[in-house]
Image 1 (cartoon, rainbow, N blue to C red):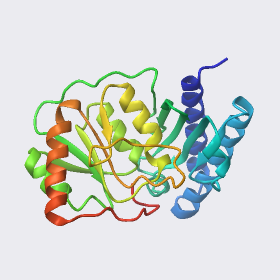
Image 2 (tube, rainbow, N blue to C red):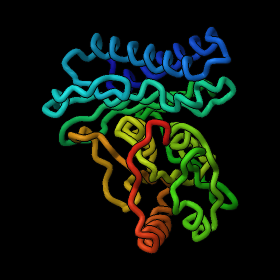
Image 3 (tube, one colour):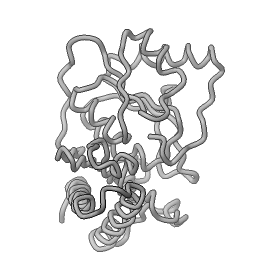
Length: 262
């Protein structure tokens, strides 16, 4: 039988190819309709394939109603059929992704894949390694619509530059490739936004946590995970310290999740 990680990679790639076909045939002047269609069709494909390949498993998807049966399941697939719907709808953007991850009770994320179809590339947790260290000034990728309030002062403390980018998956994979050194988010996310990217970067030896350093927990009753830090291991302590100092100074509390805030 295909391993869970190979299945995740295959399904992420298949959904990504479907999304590319949809974008090629859809009128370019209606980005919202394109995004809506992409979300729906990629979700239908993933649900169909998982039902056939892993019929006993539960699924948590951004594009489907949450089924509480997952809370008692030992295996739950956490998927985002189209991470970065806004960017996908803008035909020239490549910073969107497909996320497929498997959570197992007592183990956490055990298989994960992120596809970036426009590159094209698929990153899977069974085939990644620690990226080479970048030379020069550190780069921190942040949301191009709602970067954290404290991102700029944290970057100043770290001597880093901020780089705006779409999709959570695209930002996490930029760190994985060594194009950036950290990804900082605090504007609100859900489990499907980070499960697959976190599974992939952890397998590569990178750091991933909440912005207060606590663990990222999945398959929770309310699947809201408002903030995220992914970075090279050597940046973990200085970034967490800078974030804590700035949040303490401002009395900052994360905003509620916004569906376009990645």
